Length: 125
Image 1 (cartoon, rainbow, N blue to C red):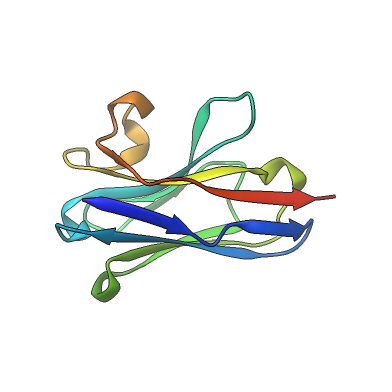
Image 2: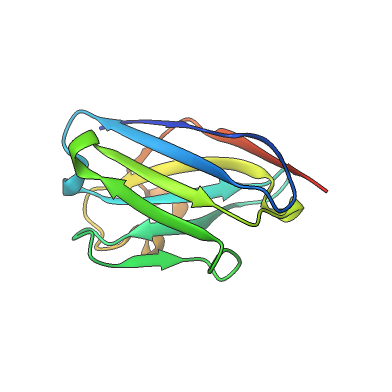
C-alpha cells in the first residue's frame, strides 16, 4: 500500500488544520491505520489511530479533546482534524499502516510496515 499525506502548513496557535492520508493499492480496511509525528530532534511519536476493525479510536494524551481521526472508506482516506493547535504540536506528521497488528500504536515504530511521506505542521505562537 502507498500512503500520501497532505494538508500541513503554517497556522497560528489556536487555529486548525486537517491532514489527509490517501492510500492506494490494497484497500486500507485491511490495515491498522494511524498518525504519528516527529518534532525536530525528537523521536517519532504516536498521535492517533483506528483499530484494524475501524471501530475504536486511540489518541495520545497530549492531543485528546483537540484532534479527531476519521476515515472515508470509499475514498481510501484517513483524516486528522487538528483543533486548538499549540506550538508544541509543531512537527512532521506521518500516516502509517500495519498489516497485522490490531491497533498500530501497539507496534514499535521501527516495525510498522508502511509509512507515507510526512507533511509539516508549524504552529506559531
